[in-house]
Image 1 (cartoon, rainbow, N blue to C red):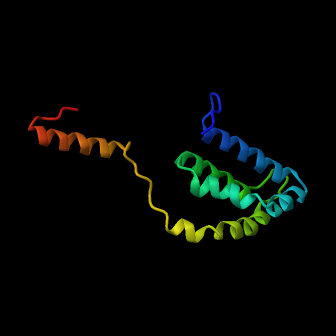
Image 2: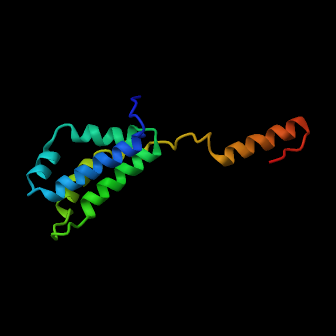
Image 3: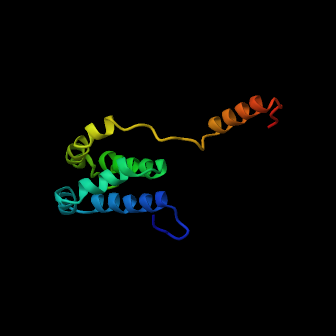
Length: 129
C-alpha cells in the first residue's frame, strides 16, 4: 500500500482518469490509438477494476471509463471511438469477474447491529443504542 499524502487512492484515481479523459478528447486520435495499443492497459484495468479491494477506487475507475466512452466535448467530439476497444479489453475479464465473490463487509452498520444484538442475547442484557 502506498501513501498519497492528503489524498486517498480513490481521489488519485479520479484525477488520473480525469486527465486521461481530457487527453483523449483534446487529442486528434493518436493518443487514443496509443492507449489501446499499449500492452500494459489490460493489467492496469484489471488491477483497478477486479483486484482492488476499495469499492471507491473501482467506482472512480468505472465513472472515468464511462465518461471517456460516452462523453461529448464542447467541440462536438465524442468518445464513441473508445467504446469498442475498451469493451474488447473488458470482455477478457468477464470470466474472472463472474467467479468473484462479494467482499466481506464486516464494517457494515447492519453487521455491527447484528453483533450487538447477538451479544445482548447471550449475556441476557438489553442492548441500548
